[in-house]
Image (cartoon, rainbow, N blue to C red):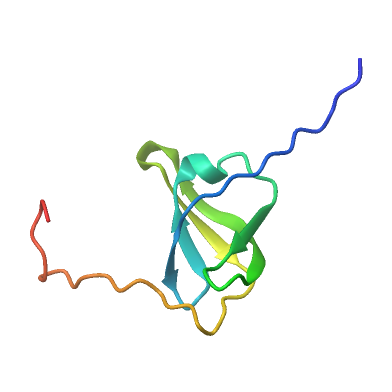
Length: 86
């Protein structure tokens, strides 16, 4: 019996969380990934790998090789600047 390697690609989204080159995305997107390629809005590409995954809440963190200088991390609200439900 011969086995063929299964490859697939998908276009998903994520959010650059910090200048430390971490991207937050959905866990189901990367849970079985063996290779990750990230493309930024300007067209720059880099590789990445999963550093944290939590399937229960469907979140994962990817560490990428390099972030373009034009990319900006998302700005999160301060703890007292929002209310539950917003």
